[in-house]
Length: 392
Image 1 (cartoon, rainbow, N blue to C red):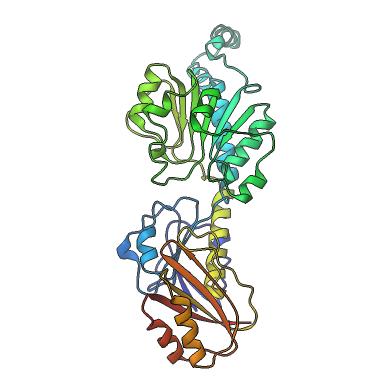
Image 2 (image 1 turned 135 degrees about the vertical axis):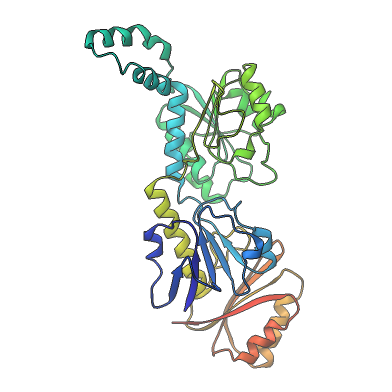
């Protein structure tokens, strides 16, 4: 029986994936084998001795102590793409709001609540509506920075709106490249993309290399009057530099999902309260994907969509399986295999991969591992943990 501790309000559709026969799930579970969370801030001291996995129902893992998990041999999962459509739709709404003063128009009409005469109301509306005149998106250029699950969806939707789409992503994956429409123009560098874009939308992860990506220097490359959209992470944009660019007209507007002091009252800024994944569908999709990743890992040892472990998947061959996590140092696999050979344990199938300082092994064997075998493998220097499964 595996124990899963939950934090936040995890969608029922996700929790229903855990069978009662094999899993105990809840917010009060002690000594869990895995944790499932959304926005809860997990601290390093929360990582209990038997913990083997943390799954975040969302893409970002800035609320998880990933480095501490890696040092303890704990897998950290995320759910990239599960909320992509939700974020894409919010970005499209932001594009429309930036092109047409829809918000201002609604506020103006609301201010006329005391006008009860229909003719007078129509006269006022017709007289003032030119204040909210906008422009069409068709024919305008959109620069998409980051062409992953969300960026590629935004790019496709912008093409459907008749926009010219420019893309930049030096680390694009093969899967993302397949998803990307051929009409997207690949740019070689960010200054070129900024200079050609009427709108720029950010869809890169928050990593050390992207903190302050939009700064005083990069803002100087923007087309004067262009609109910047940030539905990725707040620290990607340097707030003080952005405010200066808004004040002097280098940037015509900023729409983001991350309110920050100093920008909430700016007349060229529209901010939403972190609504990117706030749809019923996105919350359910993230919860289901996170649950499935934990179930597969705890049941057969496979690792998919981890931010700190290598992707390792081995089709079950029946019999028994060892999942071994070790520090990524030379000679580890040969030591493990020597322990098995000394006990005349036949290896049916295996896979070994590493990622930075962690290596992970799945080894299918023909017979059940006795406690003495597990102890011997655990006794190898740099082995972090060992789990055994019976594979149906």
